[in-house]
Amino acid sequence: MRADTNRVVIITGGSRGIGRATALKAAAAGFRVVVGYASNEAAANEVVAGIETTNGKAIAVKCDVGNEADILALFKAADEFGPLGALVNNAGIVGPSLRVDQMSTDRIVRMMAVNVTGSILCAREAVKRMSTKHGGTGGVIVNLSSVAAKLGAPNTYVDYAASKGAIDSFTIGLGHEVAAEGIRVAGIRPGLIDTEIHASGGEPDRAQRLAHNVPMKRVGTADEIANAIVWLLSDEASYVTATIIDVSGGR
Ligand code: NAP
Image 1 (tube, rainbow, N blue to C red):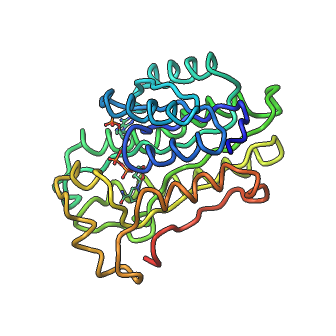
Image 2 (cartoon, protein in one colour):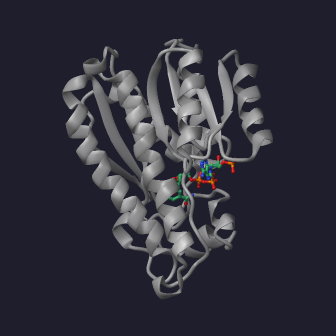
Image 3 (cartoon, rainbow, N blue to C red):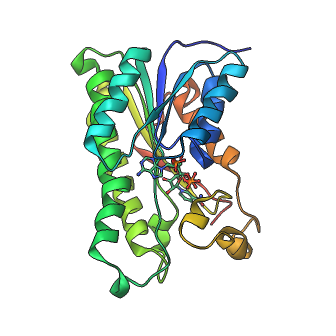
């Protein structure tokens, strides 16, 4: 039975992979869901339709988090949908496997713009709406990091790993900054998860190829990450903030 909170959750990159799974589960938990997407409108609309089929509420909004104007438009659309209760900073990109001495400036700048600056700008907009200091009633921010933040991803995408290291620091710092203002901030570090992100980096089989390195000897699913995210969004996690949880099969 759906417990409708009437509160909105914005999920950046909610059209596919972990974001999609989170959107479906957050709707089932009673959130009105804003499904952000970069370009795949059909996938975003499919998520909205899936939520509406189960009597949930959702809208799809195009938002490249590497673009501030898109972020402001995303939050404006969310404001019109209902009171903001949560943000999931899920949108993230990898690049083709390269050593750092082979990386172009454009690649590194784009990596940081999407994975780091985009997440910080979205959090800024969420805090303006949710903080009791600004007249809000509190809320939750969940940031998607990666175990790459700890492993460094040598010879693959050190730039990506560094962007996720920044997300870890941001999660702790912002968590402390707004802890007394009704906002909890937490991170998730997924391990190898079976999504299309690996194909976008040029290696569709990457997760399966590396599965033997995982202590649990298998890749994870988007649902397994979404379960942790939706738990963090819930009151069950009411004393959890300024921390990052590994969901990685022990990796
Ligand atoms: P994915 O399957 O590649 O899906 C990416 C999602 O983000 C899509 O909805 C995509 O939208 C959206 N997106 C891509 N670029 C964007 C941009 N510039 N602005 C806004 N949205 C954008 O990715 P995923 O595997 O679910 O990863 C989700 C998060 O988990 C990322 O932050 C990733 O770094 C992190 N993570 C994933 C893994 C893993 O193994 N999969 C491991 C550790 C951490 P479109 O559909 O419009 O393209």
